[in-house]
Amino acid sequence: MKMETKYHNEIATRILVLCEESGIVRRAFENRGANYVWSCDLQDSEDNSPNHLKMDAFECLDYFETNNIKLDLCILHPPCTALCVAGNSTYGEGKARYQERLDSVEWTVRLWNRAKEVATRVALENPIGVLQRLGNLPKPSYVHPYEHGHLEQKKTCLHLHRLPPLLHTNNVKTQMDKLPKNQRQRLHYLPPSKDRAKLRSKTFVGIAKAMAEQWLPYIKAMSFQSPSLTNTYNHLRSTHISTVILLAKKVGRKLDENYLEQCPIAEIEQLRDNLIETYNMKTKKGKKS
Image (cartoon, rainbow, N blue to C red):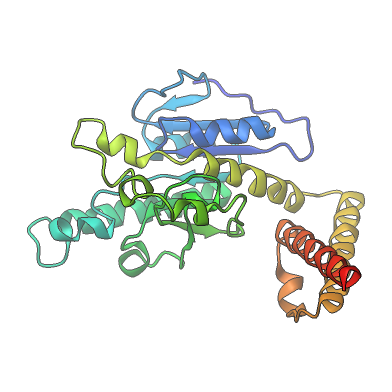
């Protein structure tokens, strides 16, 4: 296996997506302009990409470390069958296959910890499950497909290490709620087949796109190393915060300024845009009256 290991761009990004054969998340980061993106799985990739590594996840991480390739981000999609609460009737405590759940938790936690050694930031995606309770993983943030343009619901956990939670990009819940339950929960109602598990495990394109659109700029911003770039970033951040505070006062909204100082710049920009919209609506109403 050969990989490019020289990066001429000071803020070049190196991203690895583990346990993904579909290539959906990999392509989202490629399309967003990430410099180097790989996916890895024991199966061949569905799109036959040259950037897919067919190998064991731990061996893949070992390879990057051995070759002194520090990853900026590692996204994990570990097998969820024994981990999710939907499997409690089979893998729950007191059931015959409970040990399989414990083994799965142990494997997944080892992968999480190993990824944190090789990558600066880590995200682990899984359905609602037992990883926080049995594996002591950090409390997850939650994401739904309908928050990112899909007329479906499937609550999913994102356990994050040094990453901000995803912000909604296109919330279509109102439209989705008008659909029949078997359409809103399409994946749940899939008929039995040999590909059912694979279809249910695929990342929604809108969620993958949100990861790339929000996390890639964040990674680049946090990777600034030259004083001039750092000063530019800090000035931009400070300007955004000042704008948000001013707009909040104009529309009568209370803000926790201490919390605002800790927010990632992408979240500050989103809040700024929302406040601008609110201010414009308030101004238009004032003119009409």
